[in-house]
Length: 319
Length: 274
Image (cartoon, rainbow over all chains, first blue to last red; front, side, top):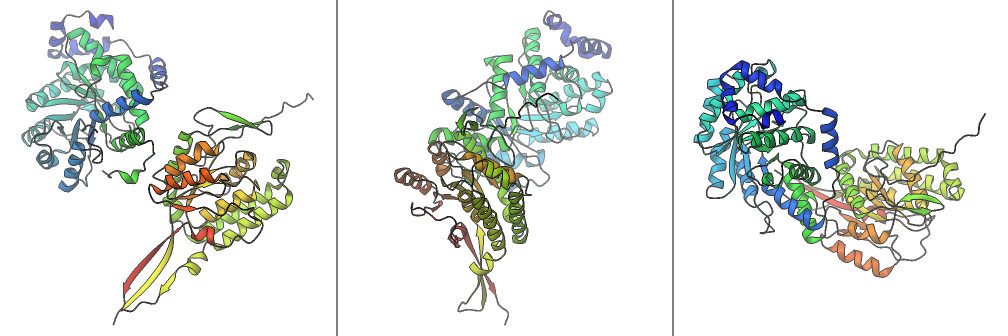
């Protein structure tokens, strides 16, 4: 990555202006060593984190959770209950921290906003015709503005995978820029949907494209396709944000989402963050987990550490 | 022909229908064979597997459960020699096969004997039906190695419970071999989970685990340990089965208590028409 690290900042911001320059830059990124990335991810997954370190990791992971419900069957009552859980994940233990954010569909944002008002828990909304992103740009922008107007302070957008895979990078770039503008002050998380990008090289290119276009976070998946977040994909994205900060000075967050269900998985991700990009990212402002069932497992493990007894799923709310 | 290289067998745990090694990687020596030494985490994993299996097993028809228990008897019969080679007397294997058949027959009869219509003073049809309590943690008796084990597993699962069994530490080979029988008997994975190793290590975890519904202390000879386990079990009001620590005669008619103590009663009041 030395080539990009030495690039001048101005060069990078100019890239979006020309399709040719953008393509040349993205295809000039070094290829990802697939075997190496998978091996590295597997190796980092073998660390043993116990006792006090585990307790710290669990609390940090709880603070990083984007408690998510993205179902057709979501009702105002259900999302309000979820928001209440976000504020006090373990009602029996006041020392348990609150989660990072609640993530819902735009139509549910006003109901969640009522509950979260005045708290430090962020309110994220998916937008831009989630999960496919296959709608006219105007519709996607209107979707985004509506979510922000309703009270969302974080927007999770999906990139136009059709355009990306067809090689129309400038189009994807301009759309992200437009959505970023529609977001106003809200944070923009760009979902790459890595399960549909096929190769790690594409993941690296999409990560850079999203960051160049101004995304505040890059997120792996919608959770709506069979392959969601994996350790190697997150490793590639972490390397991208590390190199991007080295090149431009701007720090971008990472959010793996989908398929992270156990405390063990979450701790593997935290180890990888620490080893790849360092402690700067070990903060809910820079790393999040998109998950729903993960929170209950974290709470169960937390209870085990504090009481010494394994609790059962019956002792925690169903989301 | 050169001489064959001997195939050495590793005796592992039985969790969720699979035969994993202990997550701790530990093992201990029994009859000059290595046997997995289960850890507290293995106990936790076994409870998770048992819990996951409850829905399907309790939801299966009683007739189907009976068929599967009978299938276990068939498979056990076919492996008679294997148990004899491990030192289990032939008579005991026969008695164990018969015990499976006996319990298999109870699958669809127990609800009739133990449930039924209740006479009530009102215009209601009042009906009680026994239902499984859920996950049962069992400390298997030290001996007899096979019949004792069958005598605690079969009555728990025939009604739809799932079990996590702490096998006899001194005779685990018969337990693991029985697991091989169970694994080939159409019994869904997770209905029976078998941990080999120290009782003092696994039993307290199981007794305290809040996702376990009942505790069978048949194999706990030490009165002090049994009392401690009962105290732990009280935390979430587990049903506790603690037979008198006498020399139990496992060949005698087992009676219904082992089955009925692991049941909950559901009663339905249905309004009667005029």
